[in-house]
Picture (cartoon, rainbow, N blue to C red):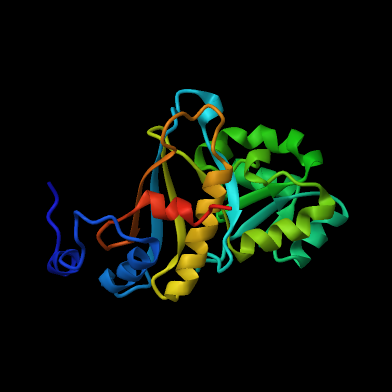
Length: 238
């Protein structure tokens, strides 16, 4: 079993392991319990009442966090014609067609976080799917990364501004970054609220029983803090 350092153990003393915290209190405690010298990422981990063995119960969608994640994504766009310059003007880090596909295929170029493509490029992009897919970089309509040329600038700005994709793992867990410990408690709360609304909206019709079973918030190096699922879901009540 790995041993924790003194700073972690001191931070752990601030957390009551038997308490299910209200969202506001949990997020404030995440900030208070962080101790690293760098600006730690604040993460939300949710255990859902889904069966990942069934395709219709898997979740994959996106959410635009109102305050972003604190990290600007590097965006690559597969497009052609006027859409290439439009993508660059909108803030894409890389945009092009055959030359980018060849660079990824021949040079193993993966210096980007998100790949977006226009529909007319997918026939070509599919040829490098074996390289993009395992890295989670393959454009996909479920993740909102295959878009027509006319909405390309808006999509790029959303991704650069804090739109994140989330999908469950094989155990039915979601892991989503919602900001940095340098964010204000209000900013973290707004992002958490927006995430919970997106999770609620993504509930598969085949999910039975309790949907959101556990919620834990933590920073990169800090201890996990349990959130009361009922209070978190009440945030999304109409």
